[in-house]
Length: 390
Ligand SMILES: Cc1ncc(COP(=O)(O)O)c(C=O)c1O
Image (cartoon, rainbow, N blue to C red):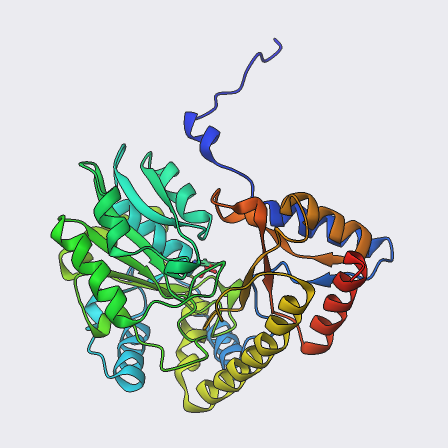
C-alpha cells in the first residue's frame, strides 16, 4: 500500500533552518570544485583543544572511563567549576548548583524546560541566538522576540521587560557577550534586569557562553550579584572544545532538583571522556594559553572592525566580547540575504545573513565571525572591497 502522509508535529512549522549551514555547505561545494573561500560564517574558534585537555581525554579513554557519570556530572568537575568561579571572579557558587550538560545547548534546554510549559512565554532580544526560539517551540512555549537596536547594545532592558511582560510570561533570556552582536551587559545592567523579572515572579536566564572572551574590563558573571538566576556556560568557545559537547548550568537552588530530574531523563549524563578531559581545562598553564588566545581574538577584532567601517558597513559600537561583528549593510545592499549569497558565489567570502538571528532589521545586517587569522581576514576584506567596487 502506498503511504499517503507522514505524521508531522505541528511544532515543525515553527522550526526554521539555520541558513548559515546551507551557506557553509555551498562554500564546501565551491571549495571541492577548486575555489578558494574565506570562511567568516562559522561561530567556532579555529584553535585546537588545548594539549593538556586532549591528553586528559586520551588518558580517560585508556583507563576505560567510558561509563555513565551521575546525571548532574562528575563531582570533581562540578567542584572544579565552583573553584574556577571562586579563584577567577571571587564568587561563591556551591558545586551542588552546578550541573554538567551536553554543551550550553543542553543547559539552555534544561533551564527552559524547567520554567516554560505549553503556551508560556520567554522574552528574548531580536537579534539573538536562533536556537533559543526553537528550544521554546520544542516545549510548545512561546518566544517573545523583542526588537533591540544599538541604543540598548542590542540587548533586553528592564523597560522592555516591563512593557512586554504578560500573564503567561515566565522568564527572560539574555546572552552576554551576545551572539550575533558581541555586546556585553555589565553586572549592574544584569542586576536591574534580574530585578525587573523577579518582581514579576519570573526568572532571568543568562547565557554566559562567551564570558571567557571579553576584551575590555573584567568579565563578571551575573552570579556576582545574584543567586536567583540561571547561568548557562560551556567548554565550547573560550576553552576550544566545541566538538566535545560539554557545558554547564548553574541553577537557582529551588530548581536544582527539577533540572536534575529532566537531565536524568533527557540525556542521562554528558559525555564521560569529555568530562574527564575538561578537568584539565582549569590548570594554570591551560588557562594562560587560553588567555593568549583571547588576546589573538581581540587583535582580530581590532583589525576587522575598522576595516569593515572603512568599507561602508555600520557597526555603531565596539563589541566588547565573543568573536562576532554584527554589521549594518543597508548602505551597501538592499537585502543582506541576497548579499551573502552573491558575496559567496562571486567573491568567495562566506558570512552569515541577519535573518538567521531574528526578524528586526535582519535584512539590513550580516554577521562576520573573526574565527580566522588576521591574514585571512585581510584577504576577506580585500575580496569584499573588490566585490563592492570600492
Ligand atoms: C549564544 C550561544 N549559546 C549557546 C550556544 C551553543 O553552544 P554549545 O552547545 O556548543 O556549548 C552557542 C553556539 O554558538 C551560542 O552562540
